[in-house]
Amino acid sequence: MKKTVSALVVFAAVVAAWGVLPALADPDLVGNITAFDYGPCYPPGTITVLGKEVTIDSSTVFKGAPCEDLGVGDRVKIGCTDNTCDTAAYVDFGPPISAESSIASITMSFCDCSDPDNWYFTLSNGVTCDYADAEIKDKKNFTGGPTTPPTPEELCNFLCGATLGTTPGTLLVKCEGHYDSGANEIDPATKVELKQ
Image (tube, rainbow, N blue to C red):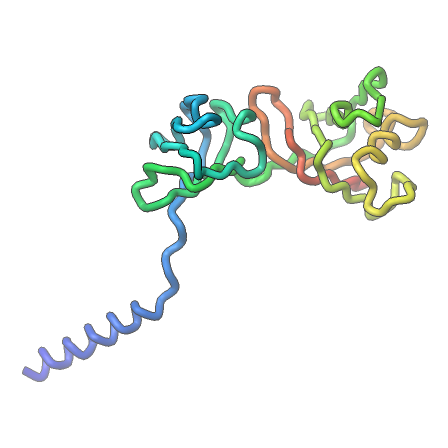
């Protein structure tokens, strides 16, 4: 009888402890898109990640990039409305990726820096960085511009001008953001850091 009472006391203590444990994290899926019904951009539609087909409805929020930028192969995080993950609460381009290298090329014919479509460069490792919406970090003030940190337009003017950075291989840059597999580039970049 004592053992039974003791067991019940222990069980009650465990159940009570469970009551104060933090709630479980929201369910999600993180992986590459393997199938995509373009209807999600005009709900309802579906998106498949890790073999799970998830419905996108009118309440699903897209983060990091517009729905129209999604495609098969893109890495995303899907926040699920419940444990079955039948419906997505949100779809976010996956954790930011980054590439760090020297700048290999800037297409001078596209150096109209008033046009955000021209705010990109290609690194020596072959990765293109579209920095139109990126935060620019320039701790060593390479750009020497009036704004700290510089704006994307000021970075474009710096890269396209007769200054350090226009010669391939002379400026080490880290580009971080979301990978667009269709274009094989970081687009959109969320952060560009001029390192040395």
